[in-house]
Amino acid sequence: MTAEEDPMRVLLYPGTFDPVTEGHVDLMRRGLRLFDRLLVAVAKGADKEPLFGLDERVEMIRQATRSLDGVEVTPFRGLVVDFARKNKVSAILRGLRAVSDFEYEFQMALMNRRLDQDVETIFLMPSARYTYLSASIVREVAKMGGDVSTLVPEIVQTRLKGKFTKPR
Figure 1 (cartoon, rainbow, N blue to C red):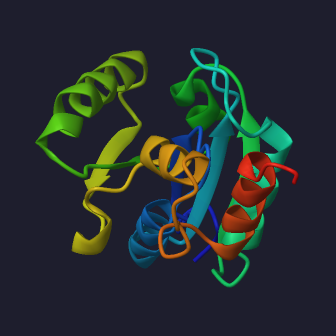
Figure 2 (figure 1 turned 180 degrees about the vertical axis):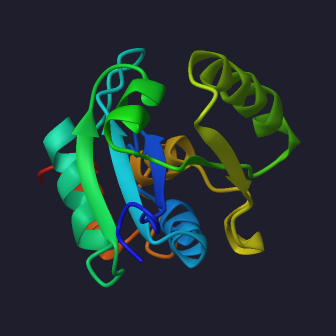
């Protein structure tokens, strides 16, 4: 078979990842079980001012996923469906932690389908231990001096300490 007859199936996981959590990494692992390659697209974050800059978030995800074969991490701007089309993506990965995520994610999936009928959205649930976890909760706990060591990759924990530890 030629590459055209048996194309590599690419899964796109877009997000701001501010910061990347163990829940995100869990979804990346799950996505790689279903697809040949995972493209993690890190958004600038137009609607909110991120704690970490775009390049820093990309670097943290690269370090957090270095043991996962088939992962590529890249920054992006613009519409997810345009990025997906340009990168010959088979599907977009979205995580559903709770019912509260469903309405927003469902609306986004339907809009993406309207913009490009060839790009599907795949919803995966994280492991039970990460169902409550979000980047905003991690930022808040870290800001208040709480232990986030089991919630984020080691590189993220180090960077969070650097952001929130006050000099003495």
